[in-house]
Length: 116
Image 1 (spheres, one colour):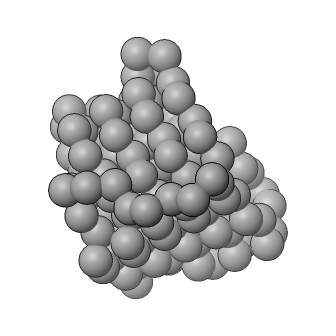
Image 2 (cartoon, helix red, strand yellow; image 1 turned 180 degrees about the vertical axis):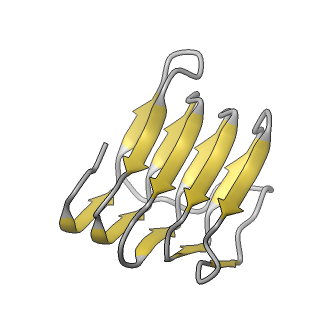
C-alpha cells in the first residue's frame, strides 16, 4: 500500500497473490503524483486500487490477470492507459466518482511486451 506519499514510482514489479487475497498495488489517501507502470499483477482480489488520491495517479502498461477486479479507481484524478487486464472474475476496469480520470487504450486481449 502507498498512503500519504508524493512523487512515487512503482515499476517492473512482479506481484503474485495467493488465491485472490488483498490488493496488488493500493494507492491511498493524500497521495500525489504516483506512477505505477510495467508491473505484472496476478491472483489478487483487486489488482490495482486507487482511493481518494489528491492529484494525478498514472497507471500505465501494467499486465493484470486472474483478479476479482483488475483496476479499481474511486474518487481520484488520473490516467489509466495501455494496461492489459484479463480473466477478471467481476470487472476488468471500474472507475467510480472520478469524473476527471482518463481511461484510454486498455485491452483485455494480450499482455504487453514487458522487458525484464
